[in-house]
Image (tube, rainbow over all chains, first blue to last red; front, side, top):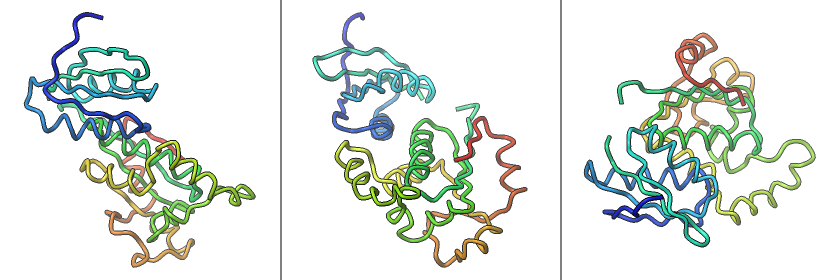
Length: 80
Length: 139
């Protein structure tokens, strides 16, 4: 994947199980301005499918997944 | 969003194993900007009684293992059914209906129900909702 985006806010969802990472991310992203970027840290394996689909479904832009050792960083740009 | 997607679920069962999935889906759908209508009928109505979600047990002889299952649910970090219901409600996208005909059958009265219940209807009312939904499920 390309260069890691710079997030305006980071939300740590590690330890949360489906569907809580999405629920909390929804709350977090609504605190951002349109055009700003939310970074979510999640160790839920299902997040790899969930976050890209959820971001597109809610009218936002999914910018990418960046893997760390035992979790991943998800970047979503608020559009809606 | 121009085209709002909708999900309609019949919640027919009152046991822990069947009560969890509709609430998980409702919570996720609420956070995905989808509208959700849950129609609680038959044993599902028992979940809408005060403390109903807390009292739900596994089915049949497995009910003896309910405590262990609830402990495992907490241990792996899955939200409680009450938390899922509240999250779905907080999204503003969840409407809860109780089935009037089976309320009599199950001996559930309006005053027994949690305040999250939005309305009461019968089969025709739910069908009118479900026919326009993008997702229809029966649990």
